[in-house]
Amino acid sequence: MNRLNITKGDIVKMKTDAIVNAANTSLLGGGGVDGAIHKAAGAMLLEECKKFNGCPTGEARITSGYKLNAKYVIHTPGPIWRGGNKGEPELLANCYKNSLSLAYENGIRSIAFPSISTGVYRFPVDLASKIALNEISKFLSDHPDFEKIVIVCFDEITYKTYKNTLKAMEMK
Ligand code: APR
Image (cartoon, rainbow, N blue to C red):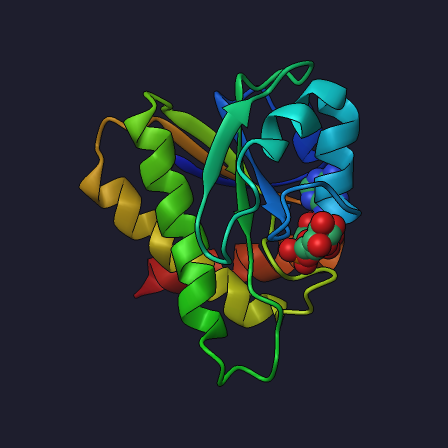
């Protein structure tokens, strides 16, 4: 699984073909990683996002990366945690599935993800990491020509959680 990497840092610095934005359904920017990506990409990113008239939770939309190192940004609104019985796990899985298939369709072969929904949207990191890594490993085994997927964690707890989840998966 050396095509899958977990790192700690700022996703706007990544040099992958694409980076994924943990957006909201308006696609008009916000705080957290959404705010950081829009700030680094510049105002043109928001202009392009406006053409979508929003995006439903779990779906994905692709734009240029503008001033970012990454050529593309894939925007996906994650689910807001409401206790776990309102379809949140499936919706989060869809964020990864739809972002990866949209990337692949656009010729993207390396991509960086943030930990979607585990900030403002309060999705528990442990469960989110299991969902994320499960979808990513399924995608990588179905797409041997995909080169690299990086999960960029912004803090130590998130980083450790993803590392532990990956280790547990590899032991199976
Ligand atoms: N690089 C990588 N990860 C980051 C960065 C960054 N520059 N900034 C924040 N993060 C991390 C957070 O620490 C968290 O682990 O991204 C993860 C997701 O947190 P949020 O950005 O709050 O995203 P989310 O929980 O999906 O909530 C989305 O927040 O910013 C608004 O407009 C956004 O309304 C939407 C909501």
